[in-house]
Length: 87
Image (tube, rainbow, N blue to C red; front, side, top):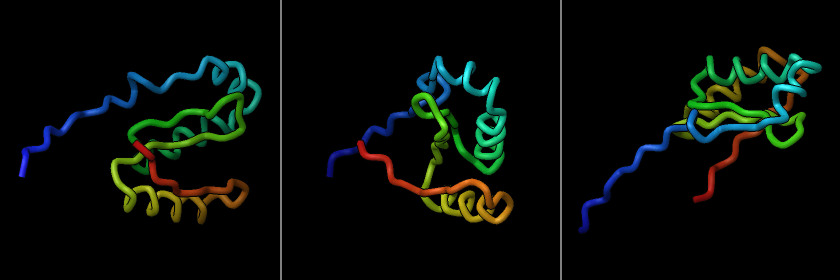
């Protein structure tokens, strides 16, 4: 079996949204959501498009589901979903 070379992906080098700064200044929940996702193990978090969606990238689905469970319990005004990344 051929040896697989594992590549690393530096999340913080690729997550960028120029609209986030403007939108987050009016809607501080965007920053709060990002901070919470990072606190619970996301490798990176970003506002999607022009908002209001914020996503976090986790190293594995178990960590993502655990974060979803905890955050949902602590903040019932947000809807949280887990999704697998397609590559």
